[in-house]
View 1 (tube, rainbow, N blue to C red):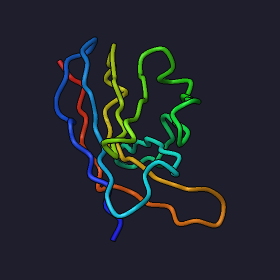
View 2: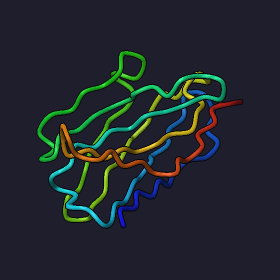
View 3: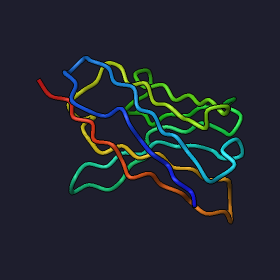
Length: 118
């Protein structure tokens, strides 16, 4: 079955950095657009970043643009989120998402907690 496993979350100070990883199994990773989302308790899940299947195009939410970088390694079935200049409002559970396109299933990981606090 399809599994997405996030890692790399933790506690960071404001202005600090963290690098999240998401490894996939059970799917043809190189055909999937990968996305990162985040969710704070009591709030809706929000989209953070997207990278196309070949890694050629990336997009970012306004709140993270210029601070976060999404990348992928199709040989490792992995997608990454480099988070720099972290702010307390970046605190959330971060989820990776795989989707091949319209009509295909949407897959989610279990999430990894990121806490930004001094």
